[in-house]
Length: 258
Ligand SMILES: Nc1ncnc2c1ncn2[C@@H]1O[C@H](COP(=O)(O)OP(=O)(O)OP(=O)(O)O)[C@@H](O)[C@H]1O
Ligand SMILES: [Mg+2]
Image 1: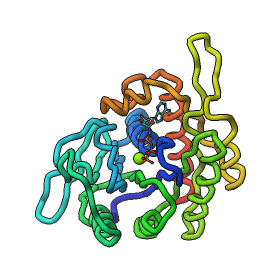
Image 2 (image 1 turned 30 degrees about the horizontal axis):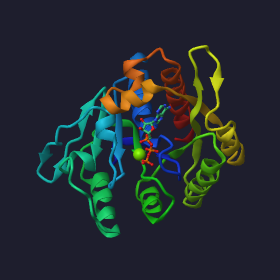
Image 3 (image 1 turned 120 degrees about the vertical axis):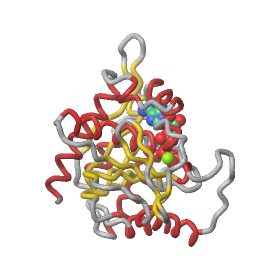
Image 4 (image 1 turned 60 degrees about the horizontal axis):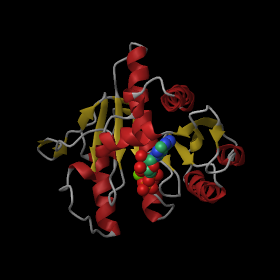
């Protein structure tokens, strides 16, 4: 991992809040930002959700990674280099593994993948705040973590537990992203389907900043299902704008933690 400048985990604690969606869109937005700044495109995304890898589908990759001897080469799309368990197993094969095997796979992802030179490697963590997440946080020499939450109270408590885990191992929290913040109806009125204020609450409790509020938007879901993330398919949508702005903030913050 010597040529990887920054490793950033995308975490939440609670499942289904949109970590993978966020990781994929952030990765694509980061790749775009670098291109727009005239810098070489060096963004990677590592899917550590061994049981339910969703990154390949969301970023439109189904090719198997090539191997050079023992080393895996990541597969690239939209300027993002990706490695995921989902690329290594048959589509419908159940993954029935025990903890030690998972850790072995994760450490192989860390050591046996030829990432090349990367500015940022994002890590999509599986849901939960257990041993698996803790070991990954410790194994990966993280520069920081981004906590994803929804506005609702149930997600807030779990997000705080997730963040505490990073603090325990000395990983700085770069900020909090609120997903599914509101839905904008055809009349332009905002509806707060999952309540309001969860992201700000988590950010305040962690003494960090609220990086952005991503609206609930069918185009985000479709982007994931069709493998063309919303930042690529609808770059001018509000959701895409938030992802892009979060990408710029994360780039800026990484410069200051390095
Ligand atoms: N802002 C959004 N607007 C609409 N749909 C969304 C949004 N964010 C996520 N989704 C949808 O919600 C579902 C859950 O998202 P996702 O898989 O990214 O969550 P996750 O936190 O990674 O889940 P898990 O905990 O299982 O890993 C997906 O179907 C995704 O397309
Ligand atoms: Mg996920």
